[in-house]
Every structure is written in structure tokens, then in C-alpha cells.
Amino acid sequence: MTFLFVNEGGEPFNIRAKCDVPKYETAAIQAMSTVKYIPITYNGKPAMRKDVSYPFELLFE
Image 1 (tube, helix red, strand yellow):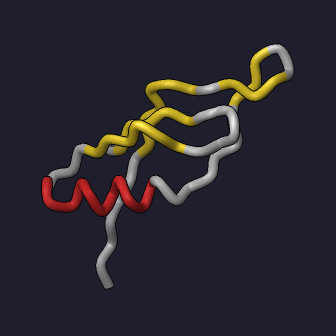
Image 2 (cartoon, helix red, strand yellow):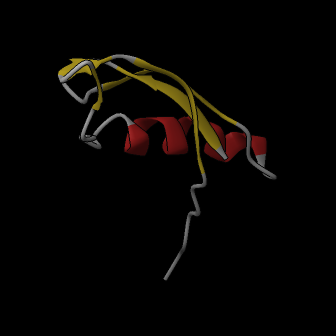
Image 3 (cartoon, helix red, strand yellow):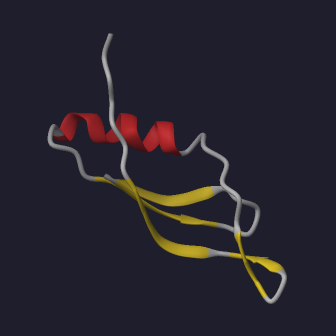
């Protein structure tokens, strides 16, 4: 599971991860830092969103 904030531009920051295998937390954080989100709006304007939780699964092939 990853936990993050999203700024007004849709960019994630303050990313944290909790994995069953702790050594994969860094990889989860790096991957989530490349994602661009659609920001929420408040009174018609983009707003920062705090405490977003997002499930994340690492698959190896």
C-alpha cells in the first residue's frame, strides 16, 4: 500500500509505502513518484489532496 499527497498540478509528493517485504518499499515509492494524477477541485479550482492511499502491487515476470 502506498500513501501520498497530490499537489494542485497532479504531482505526488510525501510518498510512503508499506510492503509485506520491506526492501520493496523504495521501488514502490519510486514507481508512484512517476504517476500523474488528476487533482481534485474545490470551488472550481485544483486543490491539494492529503492522505491518499493507493494499493500498489509489484509483479515479477
